[in-house]
Image (cartoon, rainbow, N blue to C red; front, side, top):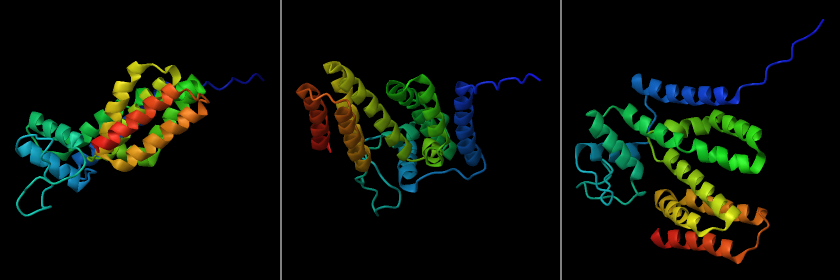
Length: 227
C-alpha cells in the first residue's frame, strides 16, 4: 500500500496565524476591559491625549503633586499612543495596544533578514515562528508599554549593525547611531545588551578591520554621551 508523503508545513501561513493570534489576544483583552498595560507608561500617553504632546515634558499621573515633568525614558511610544488617542477621539486602552502591535510588526522583517544571513531562509522562517510563539514576546508585542517598542529598536539596531559589519560601508553608520541613541534613552539595559551582542557579532565575523570596530564603538560612544 502506497503511503502519501506528508505535506511540508507552510511557514508563511504559520507565521501569519501566530501574529494574528497575538493581535487577537491583545485586542480581545482590550475589548473585554482587561487591556495589558504598564501604568507609568500609559498614564503619560493619557496626559498627552488630554493636552499637548511634548517629548521634553513627560508627566506620570500621580507621580508628583504639581504635575511637573518627570524624568523617564524618552517618551516616543507614549507620544505615539497619545497621538492615537487624539486621532481616535477616545482614550480606550486598546488604541495603545494597537500602537504597540504596529511597532512590533515593523520588527518582523529585520528579524527575518538577520536570521536569513545567519542560517538561511528555511531556518529563518522557523526562527521567526518560534519568536512569535514565545510567551514573553506575545506579551511585549501588544502590551501598552515601552517594552515592545524598545525590543523593536534593538532588533533594528542589530539589523543595521549586521549590515555595517558585513559591508564595512559608512552609509549604515548614521541609522546605527540614531538607533543606538534611541535605545540608550528609551531603556538602558536594552542598550547595554544590544551593544554587547553587536560586539559579539563582529567578533564572530572574525573580521578585525579597525574601520568596523571604530564605526561600532563610535556609535556606542555617541549614544552614551546622549544618555
